[in-house]
Image (cartoon, rainbow, N blue to C red; front, side, top):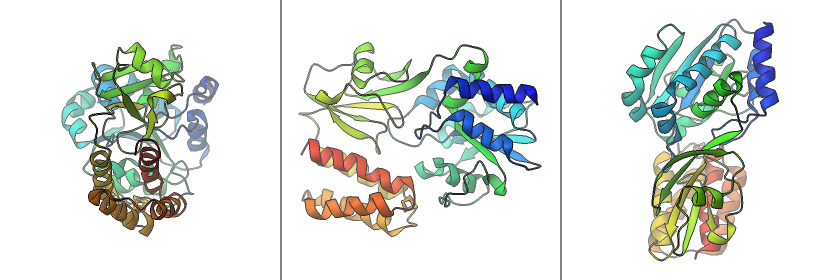
Length: 326
Ligand code: SF4
């Protein structure tokens, strides 16, 4: 018991926050699950990674699989009576299943294939999928830490978070994050840098700061915000990805159409603001005719009345591109 509490104290002391995008303090999450009274608990290592231009899980499975599994093992030892699910998208399941089976052979770990798209990565939708249903987002609270898989306390962290937990326990954690860089760059890839590094520094240090006129999308290839080249002195939020666009060669309507298609395909149709809102945006973008007043109302509705964060996140790329690029 003392050892378990020591783990949580060390994670809290490190101030590690979840690396899946929401940034919730990891130590508090672990403590919440640990403190629940239940005879069975679950752990999910979320490797759904379904957003365009986000591929850091892939990099971690390829290069640091032992550390990630070590982080899961620490969670299993810390959270009593627990079983862990490694929840992988179809591509990663095919690629890493046997490697993970070998590494986890003596652990209570299930390697699970997610057959659904982006929304299946949302934490409550992930619980639905593992329980054998469609990825429909649950109402929160209760949070999965209290009632997750089969109504039991469930710790859900992403791959990178487990990697950092292993580093904390080895005394090697340095508050870093993994960043994906792609698009109109010289060298696409994933790099580890201090968590608060600016967009500009990542582009400079990776040799990817363009000499042409450009803009970037930061935090995911669908839900990320558009930043101008004059706005790069800020840290990178969300899914820690940066996509560079050549301003002259990029058609903003084509780009918006790509996002609209993504949201049309990936939303679950459960709530009207997101289902109808995305459809309306897509129609306007296709016709290349934006009614800005109408869009403003639509964004307000999506922001305030969507059932889950996906509906709210639709607003970020469209609003920033329309305000800054058109
Ligand atoms: S916001 Fe979109 S993804 Fe979320 S519940 Fe509503 S329709 Fe589904």
